[in-house]
Image 1 (cartoon, rainbow, N blue to C red):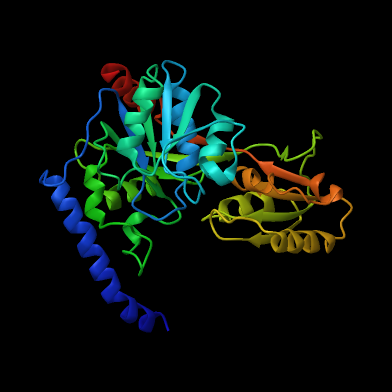
Image 2 (image 1 turned 45 degrees about the vertical axis):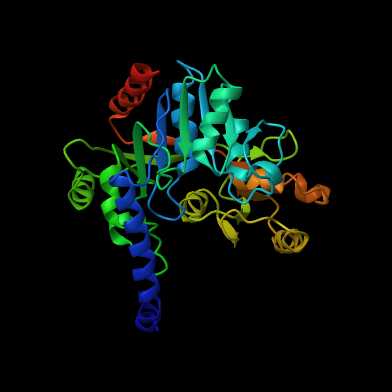
Length: 350
């Protein structure tokens, strides 16, 4: 069945790959022009469609940089219902801003968050409306070559290395692996905390970074559950039964984390960036009602929590049981070297 699928999808992958490769060649030859701007531009992206942990890394980088300068984050605002350039605040809605920009706005107290599908126009608008901005971080801008970033950071998931993947629609690659050469920094994300030197060396040989490229490894650090609606505090114990609700590309790391803490985890998985409907709420409620344990919780991700929080007709007992797990980025090693590269570039060119 897999062989038949590959045969049927192979022509589409060849056409897609050829179009993307031609586009990149035109940019490399300056037939298509990329725009440069008079302030540092840091691009955080991937060549894999989703699941690499861009949002936690953008929040981490923006948080560190905002300690020394005024930082603006520019995102596309995927699946938002608005158009053009828009400033995102903690009071904004998912509908008009997108879930990830709204999450950033609520997480980053000292950075300004904006959305614009046209990144070049977005930076021009930032320069016009926010002249205090001293650096711009492009969220998911690696393929948006209309902007020439001064520092390109490429992410790849430990559980789905880009070197193991294939072009869309056969796999999840947005472009050929030759695109890796545009990166200044490559980060292998979602690595296990106890990863060995032998494992990192093997991945380093496989990725084979160039002489000017730096390779780092990060893992996700999950924190204590935070109530989505109320102000109570609950801990997860071996006696806690959990209904895990996710609408992200790669929920397995969180599921594994919770299974190590709880004796019972029921998982309802929805597509990435899923817009929760009334029928989804009914499904969640019914699954929660089937849990008979005395201690029970509904756990979701921080990104899913942004969308779930806008649902108004949730029963009180369900609302009181809804918690999200905050997630942060931890460098396996060499965090100081990474920060020196980021702050050194931004400070030098600001």
